[in-house]
Length: 415
Image (cartoon, rainbow, N blue to C red):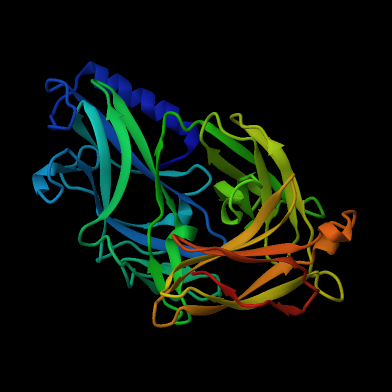
């Protein structure tokens, strides 16, 4: 069952009325309250990706930790679909779950109390449904890129099919109450290109969100220079802080990809912000709005220039080598000055093995003087930042691009 964020409040009210009319079942949860129960409901959503046509992940089940020894099967309880005795086994296209769309995973009765973690079991056998191109799933977990083909490229899952992916997040199940949580699966950050091999790895990045509290959003429309809605644009809500370490000077709090008519919606936690809203699409320019305060339904409008209309394209390329001695998950970020600090235009993640810890990257970027002709030339440059968890950060600043030309940068080392 899919539903938008607009229907979430109504759904919660129906469930609450049902619960007050009568609850049954038990759980044995940690911190219980004399056998009193409540209901935990889970839904799935995704932060969108502009790099892939589809990202399919098979979820066998979601378990809640009841306390005690984690190795003991009795310490866990499986979330089931409402009205069913079997748990969920389904292959989801994560990219269909964006802009506030939720997929209901299931619910279960638990003893009222505080719980500290869940685990997500990724399956190795797909369901019997077909993908967006009408083809049967050749793999349980795979991607289809934007090359124009329908080729299914498998996702290797380093963990998750056996021990499960642990989601450490404290939550409370109240007596005779419904607790709704959303598993926010970030496809862009979860799918890693494995160095120079071309293979793809699934290393899930998932946030556990409180559905009832998550009622704030920023929405708007991205237009082209002719005033037509522009689809496929990456839009993000960012916070900049120049006092932080360089890799943390820009934090992306939420992302979206515009629909065909240019509309987007970014879910953000209440009481946060203000945010810088940044829009970008390859072969187009970029646009941003600074200091957007959070309130449900706040609307913003952005315009992107088409950079292919001239004799020379208004975009160029930056390329270079990055090495991570010993291997690791590498993130390369491309930023430019804006909004009393930097804004992040785009980023990419790559997994490097210890036997081959170096990768060559190449990214398309707009010529900033084409996009912002009114800005002083000394402020028109990019900063390329390479980082990996528990390692140093390396970067190069003052990078400019020229239309149709590839700019080769000095090697970066993250060690």
